[in-house]
Image (cartoon, rainbow, N blue to C red; front, top):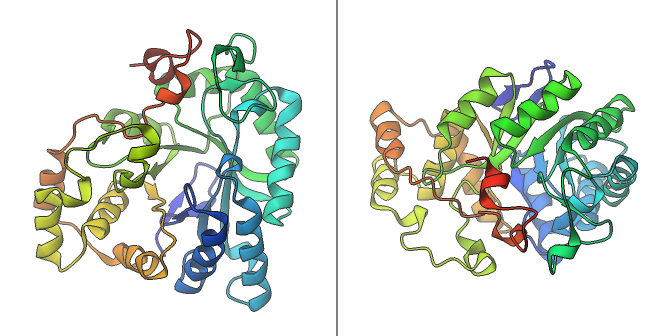
Length: 316
């Protein structure tokens, strides 16, 4: 199994199962199937509201002998309403209880956005807290503390720009282990990926297939789905593979980890087989030409007032 070596020397499985948008009654079967197939990396988050079901699947898999806890890499994420220092450890402990675990392998700050405590999703500007009140530096310090307390082996960030990573690193002297960001051929983010890797930060790609199932949720009208782009389809045909496998193999070839989501056991197995697909130089060059800098998860749900904007969120 391909792994990425983190700056600490810890190795993270490069191909994992994403659980965003996986309904609680479906994610149990998905996690059990994934572990039986060979996955050892499961990506979770408090806001996905399915951690109890994931936890039940993990516990049953461990009892069945499908995998040992120490073989697994389990990631979860701190939600935006728990950025205050006093809320970080309780939020992590809640996830651990739901997941039926004693520790996480990786805990991430989900977004560089702060909400009032108890607010899951904002309804208006009054639900936000500016980062001047809840600075990322203090949230990051609390994340480092839960790592020292052995509640999380590694800590990192998600949806962070290079500037925000430097901000928390310079304040603490410690660099995030991982930055989980949206990555696919329509949003390749070469400069950010390179900056992270140069700094010893592993990169995890979310929405690697272009997140077609989030279009309605995000209010998007996608023109050409990434999985149906002629270039991707042609490369897939040349390798006797599927478009999804090409996109996963592309992410792995860039030196990132990747967490495609599925609740279909056959698709989960198909995605797993992508680790054996090798793209050639011509394939990689053709895919590089598809970059549009087009975010599918553009953060528009945070732009309800003056607190956050595309410029302040993405620093571009």
